[in-house]
Length: 135
Figure 1 (cartoon, helix red, strand yellow):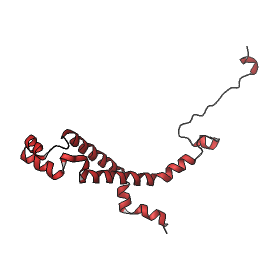
Figure 2: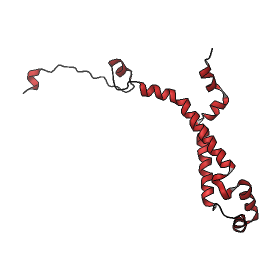
Figure 3: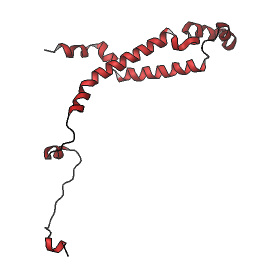
Figure 4: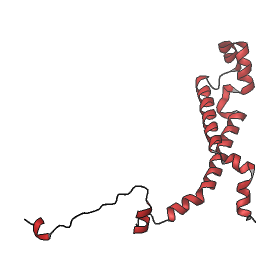
């Protein structure tokens, strides 16, 4: 039987918002829309956009509110989704991070050394005399 603390992490909404793919998609979408908001002058009159970009692109600017990109409803939704994704990803990975932080990684015993993937065993075939090394 699952505990109540683990069941909320198994829901599809939780998995959706904790997805790294979603974070990458939202970052790319925010970057592209920020570039569009930088290229298109912000805060000008609608007449300016009609004269500068023509009637067809003016309709797109007006519908998507590209004349005020950073305050448009869809840009704020993108920011909200990214913020939610960031918080959920942090909450999902925080217990493991705290375990790593609390673990004593500095002390090394022989059992831990033997389990390490890269090791070298040294064999000494002959013993050295103390007298021969001091000459």
